Structures are given as C-alpha cells and as structure tokens.
Length: 187
Image (cartoon, rainbow, N blue to C red; front, side, top):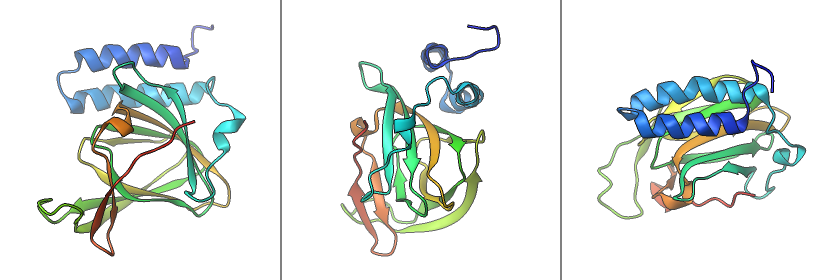
C-alpha cells in the first residue's frame, strides 16, 4: 500500500472510529463525507458485477460492508439508464458519493403529520445532480428520489448509519399520497 492509497478497509476502520466518537449526526456526516470521497477515488473495491441491476426495479445494490449489529452499512448502487427510485427515506443518516455517471436527486418534504398509516403527502423542494466524486450528505429524516438521466448505467457509493432492512425505511407515491415499506435485496 502506498502512502497516498486509502482502501475500503481503511475507510471502514475510520467509519467505526467516527461513529463511536462523533458528538452529533451533523459532525459525523461532515467527517464521513470527505473520507467516502477518498475511498471512491481509490476504487480498489470496484468490480464489474456492480454494474448489474434488476431490470424490473431499475437498480441494483451490492453490499460492501455491514457491522454484525446491522450498523454502518456500505453499498454500491447501480442505476439503469432513465431509471431510478421514487421518493423514499432511510430512517438513518446517509452519505452518497457519485462513482460513475450523473444522478439526479430530488428532495421532498412531508406535508402531513404521518398519523394515518399508509398515507403521506409530499412536495418536491428542489434537486441536485451528483456526478462522479461529488458528495451528498443526508441527515436522518431526509426524503429523496433518484433518477439516472444518462444513457449509461451509473454507480454511486452509499454509506448508512444502519442496514436499511433494519430501519423503518419507507417509499412514497406522491401522486397517490401513499406510504409503503421499502426493503432492498443486496447482492
């Protein structure tokens, strides 16, 4: 390993240290973001099969790391051209770094009080394109949707404070005002 290399195992060690010591979520996100950028630049974890995606869903997820207690979940998502995922939350913090291609993230705000099961009213509040090397920091409670607006499969590197299937993660249908559970099947 050269002095300037920074691999996935280095990142995981730093992620554990930061998660244990950060005084609050904002501090954690601000520390993890640059390190996630750094490990994406190293690309020692990148494999050809990470570009595969489920044609029906429009995306694929490859697990890189999860702690035994289901915390500190790290994955790579592939997004088929013109596809994505509708608005959803994570029920945990998230750091996303573009690996290849450009993805459009739209951000949403919940308008109702979440008191009616299965019902949700959302409005779009803006968006941000994430290109290779760019970072998106999302505190707990963030709602976003993702679309790959390019003609090629895009990849993004994702870090979460908890495995997404061990949270109360939800996806939303803004037109039908519906809220649904949202589980993933990582490879």
